[in-house]
Image 1: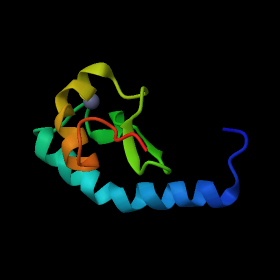
Image 2: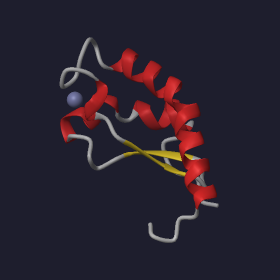
Image 3: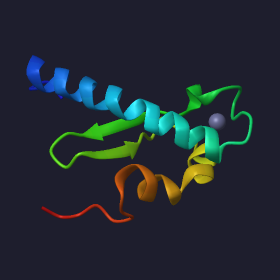
Image 4: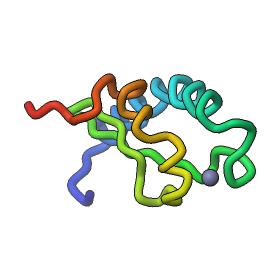
Length: 84
Ligand SMILES: [Zn+2]
């Protein structure tokens, strides 16, 4: 990601920030109580061009399993990434 300019980085942070309340609400609904103590085990990546949120590979597999496949439906609005 060495060619990322400040504007792109900024837009990325903005998108993540605007999505955070939605993601948090979703996690609260899906994860009953706690998962690894809190939600700190969940990491997300955003695809600016496609406006798509990915669950990062940094997230433990058993935690990912708890939120799939509803994550894509609720956060991205589709199960399969739409091809541009
Ligand atoms: Zn967890």
